[in-house]
Amino acid sequence: MAVDRKIDKIVLAYSGGLDTSVILKWLAETYECPVIAYCADVGQTEDWDAVREKGMATGAEKVVIRDLKEEFVRDYVFPAFRANAIYEGSYLLGTSLARPVIAAEQVRVAQEEGADAVSHGATGKGNDQVRFELAYIALAPGLAIIAPWREWDLNSRTKLIAYAESRGIPVPVTREKPYSSDENLLHISFEGGILEDPWNEPEEEMFKLTVAPEAAPDRPTYIEIDFEAGDPVAVNGERMSPAALLAELNRLGGENGIGRLDMVENRFVGMKSRGVYETPGGTILRTAHRDLETITLDREVMRIRDSLMPRYAELIYNGFWFSPERELLQKTMDECQKKVNGTVRLKLYKGACVPVGRKSENSLYAESFATFEEDEVYTQADAEGFIRLNGLRLKIRAMLARR
Image 1 (cartoon, helix red, strand yellow):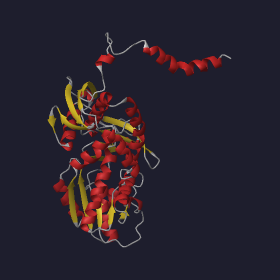
Image 2: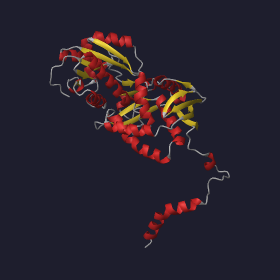
Image 3: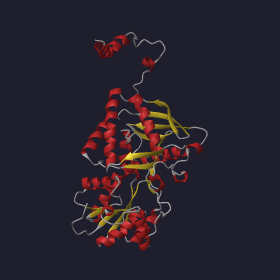
Image 4: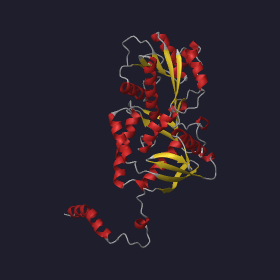
């Protein structure tokens, strides 16, 4: 979005990586105003003292670091997982869910600091520019939005690195291995470099959160997860905060090689993109939650919810977290979770996460009806009329076809 007014102060979503380090310097030089480097801690591995020091050395007026881990998991990850949200059958929306919480806090920082503009490091080709800017518009439409990738001529990693070198800015990547990665408590993603060719297998040393399945322990790990109203509250009987619980599932999943994904997805802007993801805890969590629903959700409720899930996931992927339609769907998703209470037991083994037991005080499963042994609650002869009625249209179709 072109800025057509004088800017007095900018809050930049800053990570200390190549893009935002260059952007920080570029904003200060281009707009000739103070730039606040805002950092969101959503669970990524980071030396925050070093990030603060680098931000100040690169020209920030101030570096603001906010711990958003609990808010991220509680208010964004858990709601999406209550809906079993998954994009295009595979992607657990790790990046998509982090952007709205980062953007919302960025808006708060801008308001606290009296800034009149916000900026981000998303490129003009990807989804993140949409996610950030739709959030800004929804939460603070009066703020100017500066998207350097759509304004400057530094339109390649090579030019960015050259610019950084000319300004004395240290960068965490090299010309030889320009991987782009994004990490938070839910996942880590990788793209760029050799991954741009979808035929190339990811290098094993690239992975950070998971061991290779073939290198995982030769004995399975059994765990139990307790749920209340669709949210996980305890692992192996120990109650934890949302962020601590997800971190523990990441550890358990990572040790057992669970949660790797290599896919080509459809970006909102219209192109296909290859991404490699590690989501160990999220993979366990979705598997367990889905399994608990098999005994606690009515069949027709589950079918309706499942029919809405792809649209819900698409809204999150496309950046519409702060939209009335996502909020409407969230209420529907949460309504059906009121009795999703209970415990799931899972076996983790060499990349596989398999439910092996589930129980709930709200279970709709009745052994007296389901048993293959003799029972007094179900008259098997009733099935004949049921079958005949359901087969009536097939019978009529076959009869007409013979004429």
